[in-house]
Amino acid sequence: MKNKVFFIAAIIPILLSPFITMTTLLGLANSSGKIIGSISMPLFELPFIIIYIVIIKLIWKFNFGFKLKKKMFPLVVIIPVIVMVILNIFTSKSLNVIFKELPSGQTILAAVISLLAALVIGIFEETVFRGILFNYLSFLFRKTNYPLLFSGLGSSFFFGIVHLSNAIIGGAKLGYTLYQVLYAIAIGFTFAMLYAKTGSLIGPIILHAIIDWSDLFFNLAGEPSISGINWSIIIIIIMFAISGYLLYRTTQADSVKNLGFEAK
Image (cartoon, rainbow, N blue to C red; front, side, top):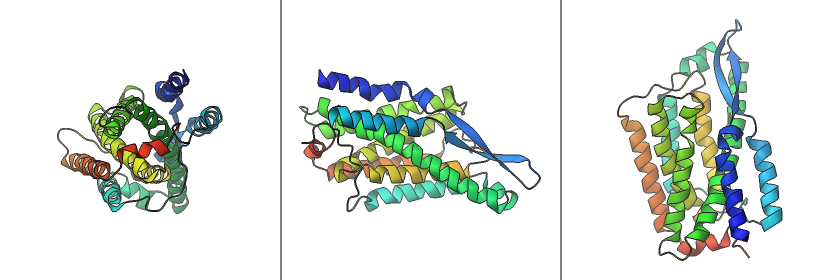
């Protein structure tokens, strides 16, 4: 009964994600007052996740893993993250706006606000999809031959599918959204394996925030137009898939026993 109730707690933020992840745009203006860019600010994610974490910990004495650990950032994860940040910079159509049209004060404001927004998104998504859903699936698959693999793939699949809301609700172009779903699945699996290997959500949260910051800040004047086959994104997907696989191969299958509601 306890775990069935926990399942309800696990899917609530996923089912409500289209509403919880609603954003408002912070407009950025040039010296003449014309709005030339914007940053999406999450409205409800931070208050929701704070209340959610407190309730889960009180009811189940849940071990999320909000702890600093040694070797939280293996090189095998750092490399694809750096490549993705570089990709966001070089595919950006906002560089001229950022460095030439925005006043310095607005640029600094955009950098800070986008960093805060990215951190909130990272905390929300890593807590829900790695801290809760991954742990719950680990419990469900605990008697199978590959509990770590199945729970990692399952949680990352849901993580990717949720990004379809960017097109359905946010109005993003379908081609860009499909790429986003695919690399969200690859990134989700990598972060799940990083979480299992280190026993800490801090690493996935920080790396997630870095990726989202580079997207929010360097695309403040609009997302790049993507159509057809985009090899740079395909390479990113492959790099994260390889990273996740290498982490999986070096992580003990029973490592999740020290996480979540199975922790003693």
